[in-house]
Image (cartoon, rainbow, N blue to C red; front, side, top):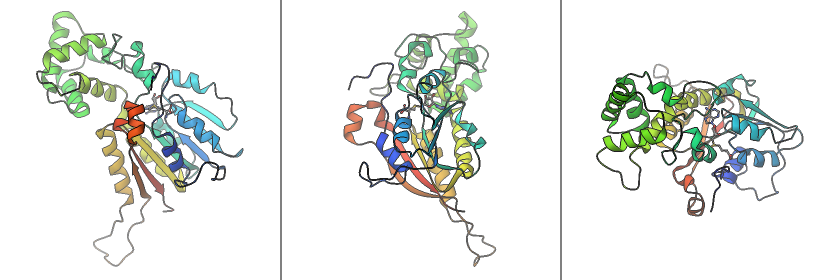
Length: 314
Ligand SMILES: C[S@@+](CC[C@H](N)C(=O)[O-])C[C@H]1O[C@@H](n2cnc3c(N)ncnc32)[C@H](O)[C@@H]1O
């Protein structure tokens, strides 16, 4: 399938929305429109949001979040009184009233328009400023951070968020280059510096893939925000409410998986072996990966994993 740089092909569109509405087996048109309040924590280009809206009754509500001003501009085109958009990180989910939400969806990471717009600096495939902020209205770009960051911090970021074996040498090369000729400021400069430093190649992968991933995760505080948003979802979901999270790399999926496992586990008090276990707040329901047809049509879906959990009435 051809994708234009300005569109985003939604991953697991029907699967995610079905999971949110708790009707995985319903035939189209079978499920009654829902009245509740739903959250799309990652509006992007609104693929999931539009399908959610189509399943809501006139009393239903959809609140969407996105950090990206371009996503917010797209959301403003939806003229539906049941819909509202917030230009905020989804760590702000906890500001919604407790136990008020019937379903929270998070489709993590970057959208195709972000990756495919050279001026955003997310991709080593295009020359552009080394920015990588999802929210271009605040915070530091990667280039600004690299102007002063210490070697040890740069290495830690590349190792922890990129799982890159050559984190140390790449960090040293970045700082040596800064001292010799000033800091790098473009995607191409970063890609070339990493390619010159990383001596072994992973088949089919650009040598700078891991470093770009690491800087993007760091500069957007992606994993910290995910932890916060997951915690907040426990408070805002009503009993029976659904948590649906689509992640695209192992660092994200590990956090989601461990979070669901931690809150789904019955905890017994060893000092009171006959007492009832501490009640669990979530029940793990499903783990879904895109099928072969979806991956063939949209290569970005290849690494997606969707996890579904239900808020219990604990
Ligand atoms: C994969 S896209 C979502 C695509 C969307 N489901 C669709 O169908 O169009 C991820 C979106 O989430 C946004 N995003 C990522 N992390 C965020 C965060 N912590 N808070 C708010 N938005 C975030 C990105 O800016 C991007 O627009």
